[in-house]
Image (cartoon, rainbow, N blue to C red):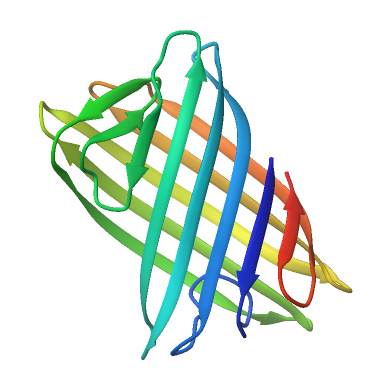
Length: 178
């Protein structure tokens, strides 16, 4: 997996966007779920509104090889989204609660967060997703991130996904491999 991020001034990562600041990420990954190999590409962005508020958006495309069709997911579930190796179709909604902290500890930037979401689409395709993550500067321009996703659903595969990345802060973008 490789990721490219372009960020404005920030203390440590997510949840530190000041008014007018932008964070954008392109993520390409290879994964295995229920015995099927897959490829994922996603675009993610944040825009700081000020006062601790941000607007975020995400577009994602996933393909599992072995018979599963492509699925495209957007921030507001509509159309098809991937739920395990099975797809959900129709209109839907998502409720999410998040908590996070970013700051500086012993001269190194860090962030950590926890996130819980309930996702519903027509036809009873309900999922619960829990996300936990941590990121820290290692020294120089190097950084690391860790993230875990737990997902449960009635019409989808239960899954645990983990991600570990190490990267480098360049002047215009961060580049990482995980």
